[in-house]
Length: 244
Image (tube, rainbow, N blue to C red; front, side):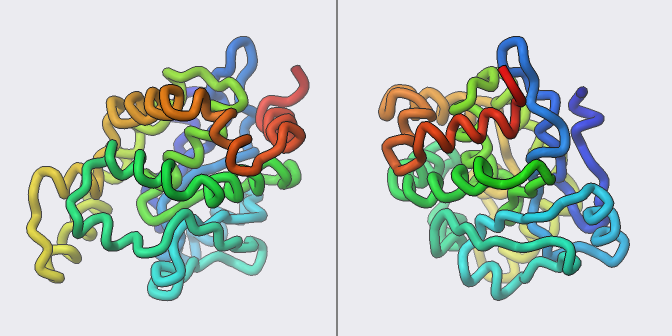
């Protein structure tokens, strides 16, 4: 499965793609098991129908309580939204002007149990598609997906390349709308802020994977250390990669 065919069109989403086709040694991630996207608060009637046609049964919403209340997901009754916040106070990270790399380190160091919950829910779901999303589908989604994929042996370069796709998907209308909103709230628009809002350089994910390896040993060790079990990781591998 190519990057083009992994990218899916649903009206109201900008950053939706299927993880199917990513290489894990001599195996590949099965299509239709895990999708990732930006927030579901812009879905149109057409978009809801398109999402339902993909068979999505569950959406893991990584946003915090305030974000979900302010911009609720506009899914049909066929989709169960499961709040799975990584951390509270997400809006403050933009105002603080933190770098992507520092943000990811802080999230991984501070919210290991939350990451474990998200990965556990991916592992224990049935074979129907699960959609993982936050607001941009970039930072919280990107780190959850990277941990899950790395823990089951998906190739490092595949994880990095998948993460990097986000920047081109968000460029234009999505980024412009978010920058306009921040400008209205009096936030100074700097190159650093632009990178934080819409950037997903390969170097940021490469550095993050290096950090996990150096500080925790591996993504697998990180998740095990935060409560995910070996059985759950085996279930995740089976669900995403099939039989060895």
